Image (cartoon, rainbow, N blue to C red; front, side):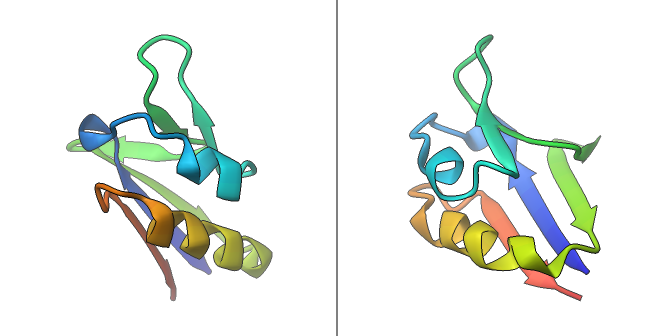
Length: 76
């Protein structure tokens, strides 16, 4: 299982996550911030739990590229 967490309020809209993991992220046309697709929001944290292990590598690259370090990716 891959767990991805995004602190959306702190997003600066750099678009790195979308470039590196387009299957998991997209940019909002409304406010220019990143959106974690198919995620659940709780207290400002957007979380996606996926059984698809294939998304780990590109999601981890997005985490590493994020200049404000608001993405967390782990395998559980």
